[in-house]
Image 1 (tube, helix red, strand yellow):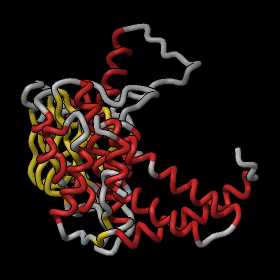
Image 2 (cartoon, helix red, strand yellow):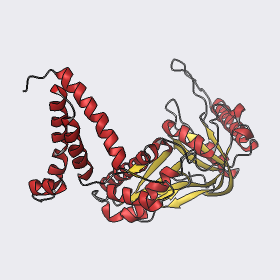
Image 3 (cartoon, one colour):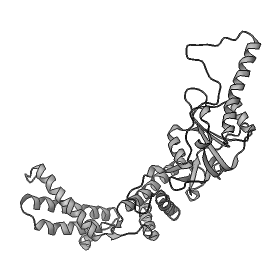
Image 4 (cartoon, one colour):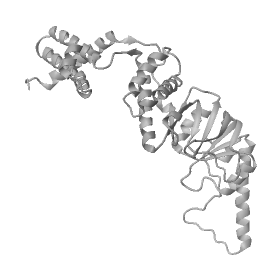
Amino acid sequence: EKGIHPTAIASAFLKASEQATIILQGISKPVNLTDRDSLLNAVETCLSSKVVAQSTDLLAPIAVDSVLGIMEHQNATSVDLRDIKLVQQVGGTVDDTELVRGLVLHKGSTKTAGGPSQMKNAKIALIQYCLSAPKTDMDNNVVVKDYAAMDRILREERKYILQQCKAIKKSGANVVLIQKSILRDAYNELSLHFLAKMGILVVTDIERTDVDFICRTLGCIPIAHPDQCLPDKLGHAENVGDVVMEGGGSKVTKFTGVRNPGKTMTVLLRGSNDLVLAEASRSLHDAQCVVRSLIKQRALIAGGGAAETEVALQLQHYAESLQGKDAHCVKAYAEALETLPYTLAENAGMKPIHVVTELR
């Protein structure tokens, strides 16, 4: 509208942005990650506007502890939030949410064959092959003409599956995680029966996307063939067992006492329905992002539009030291910043002009 070329506007806005960053750093308050109260105050501010605000006293410490728990060292400048797994379970309330320094799988162990549901000093094998009889190719068929041939096939299937189960038992594993298969059945009733007789706890239908997280948490290596069932590929945990979710009736499998804590964390989220769970998950992720931001830049600034107003005032003075188009563009940049406190005051039902004037 003023006839200034977009390139000149962009160049001046970049100058204003750099100056605004310097101003914000000057008015910021350094924060130490060992100062738990400051971290909790920042996270509670984030959660106060969420639907789950009434559970802030529980969720804020969980957000802080989960992010600080995966820091590689005290001087780390970033964390990967994908190392924190959020497991959602319907039932109970948000107040039942807990932080697990280990692993939680969203389903319980398989009990159809009467196998164990609790295991101490667990040695865990994650298998990616199928514990079921092999199938023919797409174009081939097996024609059975009499009962003797059928009986022979069943005996061979039984022998084949038993050999696979013995290989798992020989490795020393007492907990088996079976990855979900799309080609054929990842397991059958016969394989579950054999594993149950051997006293092995079985958890089925492990998603392919969860394999990497499970391996980093438990320290195990995926096993792609029965011949690769070796003790050095097993993960370890002090206790593995089913936990009944109060209020929902469903079960989860909890792994605690892992040997290398700190690489991953798990948050078991509870809620009365899917909508509450989804909102709690988003809110907790936002809170974790606040802690991650504090790890990247260890400083806090005032909220409520105060920082924006201070930057706008100082940019107005900075614009007076410039000449020509740059001065005009930086001034416009400063005026735009005042829109934030104005909008906040308007949304709060206050008199925006009066509030912004007082802030200045």
